[in-house]
Amino acid sequence: MKKLIEELDKRINESGENVSVIVKEIGKVEKIYSYNSNVKIVSASVIKVPIMLAILENVRIKNISLNDEILVKYEDILHDTEIFENGEDYYSICELINWMIIESDNTATNVLIKKFGMEFINNYITDVLNLKSTCLERYMLDESAIKAGFNNYTSQEDMLNIFTKLFNNEILNKKLCDVAIKILYNQRCQDQIMRYIYKPIKYAHKTGSLDFLSHDVGVMNINNRLFYVGVSIFNSKFKDGNKKLIGNIGKRIYDCLISL
Image 1 (cartoon, rainbow, N blue to C red):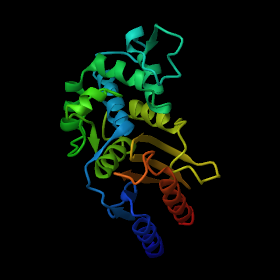
Image 2 (tube, one colour):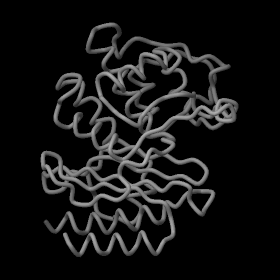
Image 3 (cartoon, rainbow, N blue to C red):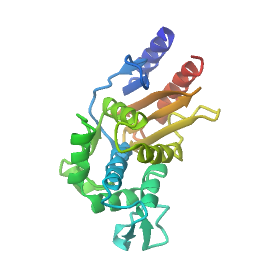
Image 4 (cartoon, rainbow, N blue to C red):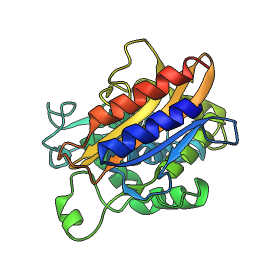
C-alpha cells in the first residue's frame, strides 16, 4: 500500500489539479488512501444518490410504492434528456429513480425533487444519514439559482458514509438497500474511474460533472471484498473537468486492489 500512496500522491501533485480521494475497504477502520477527503465540493450529479435514498425511505415507511406513477409534463422536460424526448407521459417512481441514477437524467431528478420536496430530502440527509457537507439547494440545470448563490454540495467523506451505510444495511431495510445497490451497479456512465479498466468489474457508483468539476464515487466488489473508491476533481484547469486524471487514478487503485 505504501507504493500506491506514493504513486497517487505523486500523480496528484504533478497534475496541478484540486483533487479529493478516498479508498477504504468497507468494514475496516483505517482508510487505504485519503487526500483532501473533507473538502466541501459542489456535488453535481452525485447528489442524486442521497435523493434516491430519501425516496426509498418514503417507500420504507409506506407513504408510497415504487409502482406509483408520476406525470412528467411537457414543462418538466429539459433540453438535455434522451429519456423523455417523446413527450408527456406517466412513469413509475421506480423507473424515474433508475433513469436518475443510471443515465443521470436531470428531468427525472427534478420531477422527483418536486414530488418529495427539498425539505424532506435535506431532512433525510441531515437527520438519518448524518452528513456534514451534503445539501440540496437547487434543481438540476437551474442556472438562475446558481447565480443567486444556491448550489448542491457534498464531500468524499460524506459519500463514503452514504455508501458504507448502504452496503452495511444501516439505513432503509435489507430489501430496499438491495434495490438501491442494484440500481447503482447498473450505472451506464463509465467514462471516469472505469475509463481505463478493461476487465469486467462490479462497481456500484455514481458519476457527476459540471464545468471545471468531475466526480466518480461508489463501491467496487473485488474478489468478494467491498472497497469504497471515490475521486473528485474540483476547480479544474479544464472546463470539462478532468475525467482522464480520474481514470488514471482509478486504474492505479484498481490494479492495487485486485492484487490484494
